[in-house]
Amino acid sequence: MLVNPIYTNTAGTDKQVLKRYLDLPQPDGKILATYIWIDGTGENIRAKTRTCDTEPKKADDLSWWNFDGSSTGQAEGSNSDIYLKPVAIYNDPFMLGRNKLVMCETYKYNKDATKTNRRLECEEAMKLAADEHPWFGLEQEYTLLDGDGWPFGWPKGGYPQPQGPYYCGVGARRALGRDIVEAHYKACLYSGINISGTNAEVMPAQWEYQIGPCEGIDAGDQLWVSRYLLQRIAEEYGIQVSFDPKPIPGDWNGAGCHTNFSTLAMREPNGIEAINEAIKKLKPRHQTHIKHYDPKGGMDNRRRLTGRHETANINDFCAGIANRGASIRIPRQVGEDGCGYLEDRRPASNCDPYAVTDILVRTICLNEQDDTSN
Image (spheres, rainbow, N blue to C red):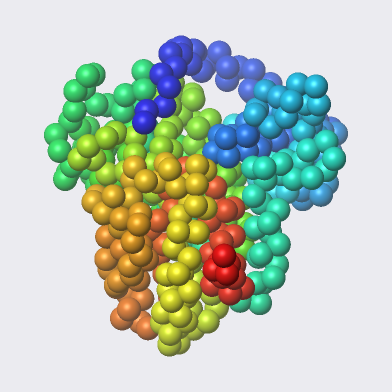
């Protein structure tokens, strides 16, 4: 499913004119804080900016704010105010200086969490499992689209040559959109996000970057803010970013958010035993995890997890060493070392990382099981 076509002249605006104003000196006592949140879809990002009189050093230094939830699918017009609670702050690579990006949770009028505030439960799980030091590495795949919704650099109304030369490819016809990828890489580093790498993916105009290793709730916070950065940078080029798990039907790879996971026990000598035990816990909860791995309870992922294109079938659970067609892959180096981490290849590219990291910890560390009494 393609992103709805949006025609824009953003790429045609004169950035040198903008630079004149961005270069204006900013008063010492004024800081711009851009509040970022997840809207009612559970996958789209919204943001707005306010002026603060002092530079925040941590999220608690910033006050709660609010927005019109009736315009984001999170409230009725008759009771529309939704609260924003700052939970993590990062350096702003667009406004520079001491300006900040602020990841926020969302709360209804009565201070109950909104439906798409999955962070609250995730943080509770991370606190309960803190002694096991859960680490995550999130491999975010995405597709770049032109303003008309067709993949960036593809022939209009047609297709490029079949998959093969594009994965980690180099060259004008193999790496489509590298400017955005490299700008995003540097912006993440500037912001304080632990981005650990990037590469061109199997389908042309599809890319991946990796966030982590991050411990606990930081993984979800950093992935959401990295998505914001990616979309803001692409906006400046007049290009759309799609996190759709299967943006082009047919013989093309889909897009996932493979999630690498480990506990302290897995990382220590002979940790392979803890990894194998974790896989045993994951198998009976396969369908429960699938429901948490895309915002539509598995419906988006069903188009991707077909058993083809480096995926397992959505209805089956399997694990193996170096097997990219498995639900859970144990990297070959981990098998040789006898310790390390496992890779859950099921999460979709548009997943909520709070939901994914939450259920992994609850299943593996907190030993939660499904109620089979009914």
